[in-house]
Image (cartoon, protein in one colour):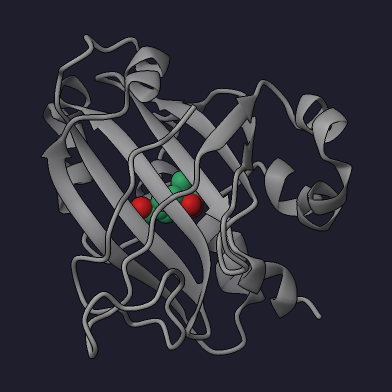
Length: 205
Ligand SMILES: C=C(O[C@@H]1C=C(C(=O)O)C=C[C@H]1O)C(=O)O
């Protein structure tokens, strides 16, 4: 099912931004999440496409904080590049996944996770308004602080099983594989999708 596209809305701190050619010279390039078909498990996805999953098996199954694991992979620095944070409409498929009414807006956060200046992961998090009540209010004010540092700081958030996404990538810099899961907290759930970029597998070479 297609996910909503997202465009770079702020200057990138990544040295080599992902995506299509710049629409305007001097502006950061626009980019879009590819259409993604979600499978209920890593094994189910592997039946459809074995090759790229082998290189990413570690990341697709990693249970703890992804940002923490990426930080450990960096030689120098790890950055969260905030692309967009706004109340906007999730895709129909995302609304269904979260059990939201079709047209209900949610707080959507889109970021690039960059290691040593290279974009490694694109992440999109859908947070229903109900989840943002009480202590969940802090989710709207993360800024460049990784979401994982909030979710894994307490035992209040429980993650559901991972789905594995196979992406219809149209360019060599686009993600081919993704994963997503719901985190269930005191006020409700959020849906976290993480798209792995080719730069991440290259970083291990
Ligand atoms: C859920 C985590 O948070 C990461 C950080 C994100 C952010 O800052 O928006 C989004 C998705 C995750 O990859 C994690 O570290 O596991």
